[in-house]
Length: 232
Ligand SMILES: [Zn+2]
Image (tube, rainbow, N blue to C red):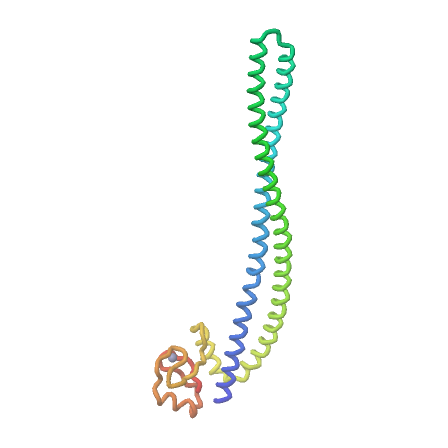
């Protein structure tokens, strides 16, 4: 019996380790995924910045065109002013030129603002480009780490499965069946300690007679409340 119980504890320990490995192996794709989705969202941001730059450039070109047309108008009116025949005509043209100059200077101010903004967005785009490179490297490294970790965990898992098989063979088949039934029912351990006469599974106190059977019984001693297998 003692052999069966210690073999069962070994089975439980190995199964627990395999369970932990499965959890860790399962986490790896998510760890890699979060890095690559970071890269993807940076790429989306880069596309947005490109769109903003395009809009800025269109606005810039339009303002520049407007500015040039006012410059042409100013040149034209200045020429007419130089050939003005009357004082009245001269004054009217002067007034017109002043108006054009006002508009041109307003456009020039806007042009400077737009150029400044384009410069800012361009810098932002370069920063995002750098981040994409960094993030891609991190994602690659994360994938590499995850691969090698998964590989070594899978190797350990494979070894444990073999050890588990051997350990299960050392357990009395009837006891193994009880254990497997309990394991299917409980997500935590099926073989628990009865320390201080408390069941380590359901945490209820266990009758002293049950406890005293622990050292003697040929059969498995189970908790009267939750049926888990008790060990000393
Ligand atoms: Zn119990």
